[in-house]
Figure (cartoon, rainbow, N blue to C red):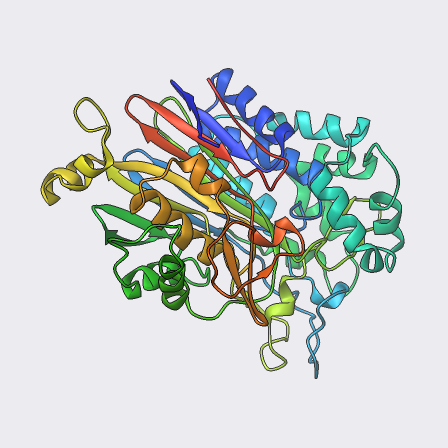
Length: 451
């Protein structure tokens, strides 16, 4: 499934309506940050099992010749009580959402359009309704017992087509006053001050020189930096191919233990001026904590489930994050430098002078995000696969109970994945010559669009 080629710009996301919203912004003169915010806003409406205004956001932005990281993860509410066991669901598992604060930080530093204007497509979809995407319908069926616990969640998500969310539309119309609007309605232990106190943080991504390119991942408390450690441990793959079991065994040994599944969205954008955005946004688990703040249509994340009884008590603490948007920097592509091996062979000084995004990529999938990064990087930069083929290729995931995998891999002792979503929704944009190639994961309901 080769990637699509576009001469100027592209966006890829796990839902075609979100990609379409991002493309419309690009085509009308908006930049990559504007397009990413518009796409994420639509995803908050049409893919609410994986992301939304009640979740967190991490992003990388390439702009003005430099790479910037954004961490907009929320803390526990100040009134969070001392507990003997940390709840995984319910209001006690919720932390302050950082998503809207992240959009605001992105817009203030790099955007050109107001968030309220970018929200117009999302508001329309929320008010008029949308057909439930197959992936959304599949996860809704699996999570029915959780949704039935909350009257608002059951009413909104367990109905028939279309998915109509008038309360969410009203909240989106108040997006400029989101913290006050939501804070005044959130149940205990939340208070309005918890929402007012949230601040997004600009951070420095970590980098690793690897096979002639520079792999860039988010620092703690994102787990993205673990990809760089895995690449440093990785045994040589030279002479092996993805069709060989040993290829995958070496990647598995390099990565180490896995973890439980989480649900996330990942999207990427690259505009005509070269600005690029790699963005992850999540409720943590499917449908988060399962609690919708009454009258708002906002489903809260369950990120506080990652605390321990010793750390679960109110304060400005943020748990470790699996969200891991990423980029790969390489020599500026152009005449005579379209071949990946040639770019990798450039002298270090020349690469340093010409560094810019070569690959903008990421995935959903909780702890498996770092595992998928490792598999994609090896397929693209070692095996030389097209990014669309690399994303669509069968892949594995390390679970606490053992390996699971897509059909089509060599024998590595893996069990079949019960649902394709467990193996992630990866998307990517690669700069090629004077254009871009873009691919969305066929496991999702997404699209790669451009012009």
